[in-house]
Length: 304
Image (cartoon, rainbow, N blue to C red; front, side, top):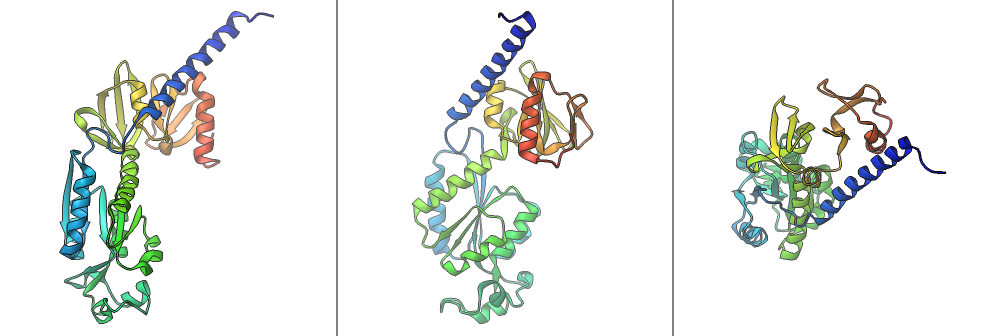
């Protein structure tokens, strides 16, 4: 028995949607490298000895090649602490045992609580107790709070510190002396995470994906609506846009893409309500995709 006109139209719509989805997936697979065009990495080193700073700088220069980046070195914990409120970085190379010139370290019981009683002979336990050393893990926790998107790579000569680094959010642990192969793995991992958390738009402007509520598709223009209330317009193909966006973004309508993390309520008929009160429509042919994506991402925490 042949299909009627309505069934044919429905089948055609499904085929069109699948072709569009396949195109997006193919473009995603074709994306190569960890640092996209226009990405400017801001790297910070917090290390208190020249003999450890120099190889790190050489590894960074070798890894980055001709890619744009900035690098700033902090030789003690206090200097970095004072810079954190006004200077932001994408990647921190963090020594665990740092010189400190003041009591910013809050070092009472520092050596016993964080690093254990028995230390290598190279570490002066009296200096730790006097506050001359700063706990790099506590410093990393401050970075987690002030700059949550930053990737932290620890480096230390002491393996016994390894279990303590899990008190903070970090991406890698490097054992000194640092071999380039290990450094390469750490930078690759940090760079991939950096790329996934940002998107490059007009004039190579970088947006945090977490700051985007939704994207409106108008002809060839893509309008990014941000949590700040601002909107930024950029021209790019839809397939290119999806190739740059992380999985938390879903297309819910011919003219809209939403950030799943910004959804506070979803109803098939009334659409998607975002955390700022904006309501985004859901197209019929996208409804099942939206349903599956929300359930997979949020489970039962979203009211549908």
